[in-house]
Length: 424
Ligand code: GDP
Image (cartoon, rainbow, N blue to C red; front, top):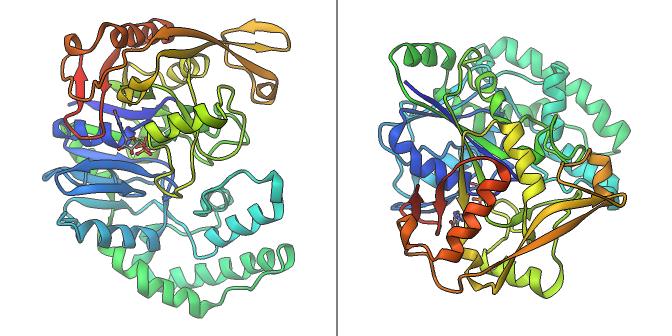
């Protein structure tokens, strides 16, 4: 038996979906343990190209059981749409290969709306939310003001519970934001249109996992976003509202006592970031546009152009440390093939002092990057499948990063397709 988490080391969008899709071959179970429909894991395989938002990236592998754990923000409406969409492309999704934890809390009809209302109120101070309701959802979960998926099996209690929540939430919607309140009729429609349809997938996944563990099954934990967006360890308040760190995987998945044997940290060969907040290595203008176009850096969920820049070793080393990564997958190395010289941010200057330590969030606005430059390789590497096939300059780039971040780069990805990978 082996437990492995695949996590983001940077700001998200590192290519976790493609790594999970690749590695699920060796696993029996794939679990999403945090976050919600604000993710956009891109997977390209024999069924086509998918941007998965809530579904675990193991849904394409026959025989793999996919679980949405208790730590996720379970949005019945978006989940159902995603199941219908992915199924329409020939992927079988049934209660045998998709299970929803009965302890997952439901994202309620007002959460997405509250997200949008608050971003509008903040105006030019907004967080850059994807407006999927994630922040209002998690605040309500911790206030014990949402319902568990398993309550769908207790219709009378569920309706009484939702009625209380509705009365409470309408106070905020009308008095704080002056917006239209919700009614029990809308809730009934939401229950019949979406919740009833996802109900067949809901079960006690803890007991399923306990049994699977005792049978020695291999389990993969799939994270959303990256270390720098983790609620406790990221660039607060420009974080997400859940824990994206590997150490949360056992808690959010339904196996709180599980130990992780492996943590694969996914690092992009350059930096990208969606949304607001400090981004020390950011490029602007022509060089940013060139990199954005080379890597097609547009949000999988929102289509927003991503902010881009050279690899940030300072932030990446910090991400590796807080994820406890045992191995690294370096993705999108092929994208850098057009560059003559490749910059790498090795240090920051913060208040006139040179440092290689990632600063406290509030100090990041004072940080400026210090770059080293390495030779580019100026040749298409997307067909390389072994380490030796890579040009020397590309190998030097990988080895320099490896030495600086202090973690073994086991996988080098040179294209989005499943087999565009070099394993060292
Ligand atoms: P995730 O949320 O971490 O899964 O990352 P995203 O799916 O948002 O972003 C990764 C993007 O890069 C997707 O469009 C992938 O298809 C693509 N991708 C992943 N690995 C590679 C790679 O090695 N090379 C290239 N060119 N594209 C890649």
